[in-house]
Image (cartoon, rainbow, N blue to C red):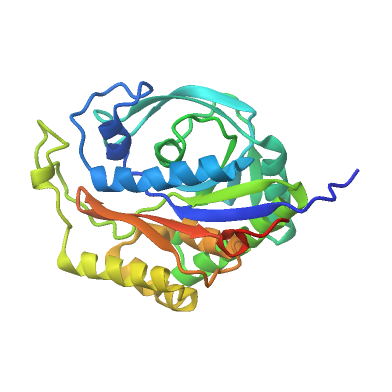
Length: 306
């Protein structure tokens, strides 16, 4: 029988994924040990953890730039996955043993809706698939208990070879497909765009003996900082039109990681909300700009009994 209950996207998070954040927390799943670091960004994620406990979503859906597919948009569709995920750039910081559950039903729905809109998409059903560190870092920082099923979407590599606007237009379609699948599923979903903002970074660790040396951490350049603040102020003011209009220039001038499409996908799935976003934290990791930002789509409904 068809599901007569409409699903709902509760909100979305810009959820940056530097592996340093997991490393600094010293969770049992991660082998390397640290002395802390990057506290402001980690404290920003505390707001997300609190909100997820309040909302109790059925699924967390993440778009990651580090599961790259050359053709189309793959959707993780294996019921349970476990293994060791190692960051190829920072293996001394991130060697994480993951064990997660995937909402296969919704994953299949997203892939099917994407194909209806003319996108190339297929479910990832390899039971030995190793989940990328972008997915794991964002989801660990959002929900370290891993007690909510997840879905991950791959990043089509086309933005790195083709016109940025064309690639972002495709991500808008993927957002629409995601929204349609969520509505049909009857489930309550939270979205996550696993992206940094400005993404020029140091070519070497300033203190290789102590990566968490916060006396060496700073923004890569003043220009990068100014671009990040400009974008964050547009989010804070709810000017989604202004944000989308400068996105191509932001990508080009700040080497912004949103080029992979996660932010555009998420905003599209949320119908480009004019609700002001809440910036819970901004900080730098090896020079890159990172922000924990929340769009709460339920805030206008608070106090109203459905």
